[in-house]
Length: 114
Length: 111
Image (cartoon, rainbow over all chains, first blue to last red; front, side, top):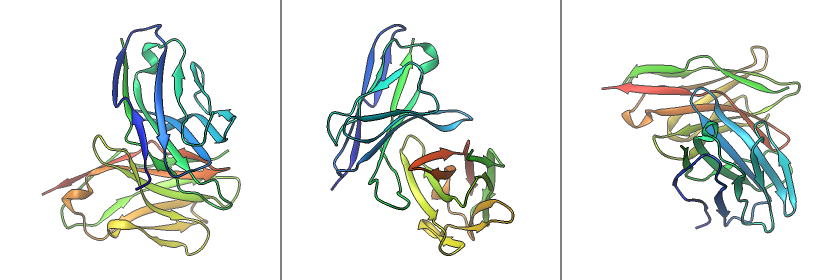
């Protein structure tokens, strides 16, 4: 079955370190998204991509970067981790067809920055 | 700009009684709206979506929502709560292939 996976599921790191969170989908979806979830804020969009070599900033992009070298993967990099980036991170994908597209979510990565 | 307000951060019901989770949205045009559910330590699952067809939308697990343009509301209901409905629910508005999430409502179901 097609799916979307994230790794690692849990990560503890130190302030100032570079961290990369992986997201991989097997639906061949054009659109991919990264969100962070914090208490009282719902999910907030970090970065998104509408296809290979396309990346865009979301609502809370400072301190994060993404790259899209193929359809299946959109890794999220924290260049220099900060305690404020302690959160649960969700990756999502959608087909990118005309009309309204449901997004499919991965299981999440819980990141702790000490 | 599009925004979503979930009017209750927590809702508590008894098993077998109706559920009402309230959502108001702000959009500069007729939006597409979703409800997602998140069970503890899980990802998000789509419950239902409104895409300008019927204003009453039926979803999975007996949930439904009614789009009311005059009230800019998209409340989620279920006639009879089950223990397995305990979760966090997110009302979401879509624009340009991007989603804007409400802050979430935690539903507690008492036995």
